[in-house]
Length: 104
Image (cartoon, rainbow, N blue to C red; front, side, top):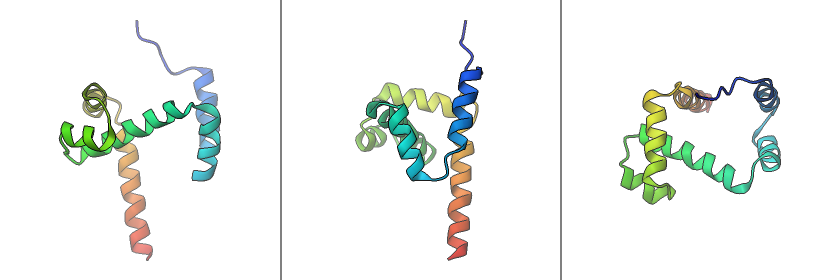
């Protein structure tokens, strides 16, 4: 039986995160909420996903991020069969980057 993340507590957490205004507020909040290792693991997975999307090899990804092949494989599975959360964020980051370049 799989656990559902859709709970009132998770809703409250996400509502709180959506209240953050900038990167500095994210640092402040996530340093309080996560251990350093948890935060570094999340950021590592995000970097792995970015590199997989760029068609980097497992070896290149492991060398740059220090991620194990098991972690890389897990992230790859999320990219292929997940809920498209990574894609949503990467698409929005690309749009933001394009907008920033056109504003210059």
